[in-house]
Length: 233
Image (cartoon, rainbow, N blue to C red; front, side, top):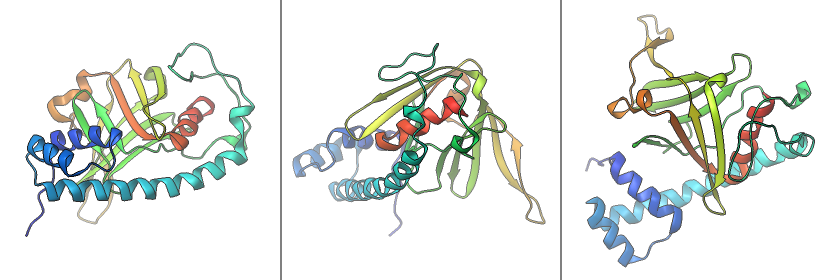
């Protein structure tokens, strides 16, 4: 029997529920099943898989934390001026040593939202969020049915970065932009050469062209350190 993928709307409801209740009982699953029009068994399996994914992410986070403790740059630099946050401020101006600058800072991101368009990570590769210190370019990259897309924007186009904890485990980071990202899709030539080609906004209803706030969610223990790396990149 062919498995039916949940829609973005269904996933949004399930993810919102997961943030507050990772192990819903049969009554809650029954209510959810009616709300998202899925079987209760499908709901149960989704939550089992989601909990397993969190455990895997926590293991990866432990490795990130070990590397972060080696750097210890959070204790060496004060908070920058100009960009405010609920819990912490991020901005430019701090000058680290070369050994403290990550080659390609990545973000622990399992959820990217722009307006009502949302992309959720279901594997280690289908959603990637990273920053290149050399080009000073931020990239959101997704894989959808073997097709690869990305949107990019320079760090200079970010007017505000806001970080805050959603709960003891997860955090949210809002990026407010002052210009529209550029959009690309991967092309493959006859000789199997891969290249990026500019394309139109691939988000639903072209929301990334209209909405200037991009939001990512991830594990607090990793995301806080990773976002701070932007201030020294």
